[in-house]
Amino acid sequence: MGLIRLCPCDCSGSVTITNQISPDEQATLIADICPDCEGGGTATYTEVQNQTTTLSFIATNIGPTSCITNGDELLSVAGEGNITTSIGTFPATFTISFYEAAREDIEDIAIINIHWFDAGVPNLRQRQFTVLPKTLLTITDCP
Image (cartoon, rainbow, N blue to C red; front, top):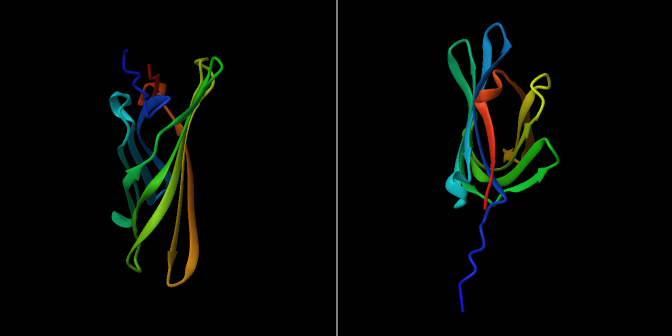
């Protein structure tokens, strides 16, 4: 009797992108989700204003991916991590979605949502990145 190996991920994906939010502020997302289809990975998000980091997030646990393919590809993943703001460092949850368009004239997109409480107040940071050039974002089906 053979063994059946269940893959923890439908697909894997990666992106490295920095977007200018304003003339003196930028946001960076670096994520390598479910590398080699083995689960886990890395995800960091930072915001810098006037050359000073104002917010940083590091994932500590990345769940399995969920993926949809219909010519285009959509990867979604959720997990936990820690966010550091000017007030302190707090536990946080996050979701990341990648959209990879099959057509070259349609932009790829990466979205991160981070939720946390500081001083008893709920917070949400959501950032959408238009990924140019398209080679900066990849989604690969897992076997």
